[in-house]
Amino acid sequence: MQTIDRAALGAFLRARREALQPEDVGLGRGPRRRTRGLRREEVADLCGMSVDYLARLERGHGPQPSQPMAAALARGLRLTPAERDHLFLLCGYRSHERLRGEHVSPGIMRVLDRLRDTPAQVMGPLGETLVQTPPAVALLGDQTRYTGPARSAPYRWFTDPAARDRYHPAEHQHNSRLNVALLRAAAGRDGPRSRASFLVAGLLRASAEFAALWERQEVGLGWGGTKRFVHPEVGELELFCQGLHDPDQAQSLLVFTATPGTASYDKLALLNVLGVEAFG
Image (cartoon, rainbow, N blue to C red; front, side):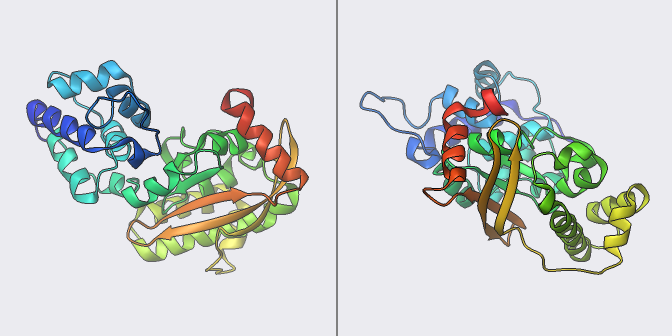
């Protein structure tokens, strides 16, 4: 780890904030906006941090951001991969290969910004939920809060019974096969000493169900198709999952929609109106 360059970091953060326009992140401009670019409070909200923390970083006398905080800054500011790597260097980090895989591309973020009233989330190469819209949190709970191996949805699926609570029992067998296939593809892509292979080894020890499915050698199962959920407040929903894959980042944007005129459509609208506070 190198020393943080506070002055250069502050200048870079200010410049990237001022270069972003409200339309770039799905916000309305409003008739009285005089700020060049985004306001600090808008960027702080996008990054999941306090306005005071961001202000101190921009002024060049804040604390060194942790690597997850630097990743949140890169995502919130919609940085390109080159800009992201530069940000990490300014923060004092020379090696951050793991967090590169958690950086959501600006293109995917632009799509997500326009889906604020729709359940949508970005999944990383190991099934990590990197970012969710508020309706997705209301539907599925906050899946971005986990750390360690539990960051991976396949790991949670086979080690934490609560991970299955919001999925209809009829979906469980298929979801188990899907999660195994996802890890098999990642382990094959990344090699025997990768994080994916580490997760596989742990699950082979921890879950007899995973071990049995691993022996089936299935690959190629995708996220898409009709999914059935059981929400603790609104009950059963039948939703269509559409996936948009970013091959450069090995990430997928998942969008959940319901057929207009159905009970699921009305329940999804209720979740959207009442929001995370009521149902997350």
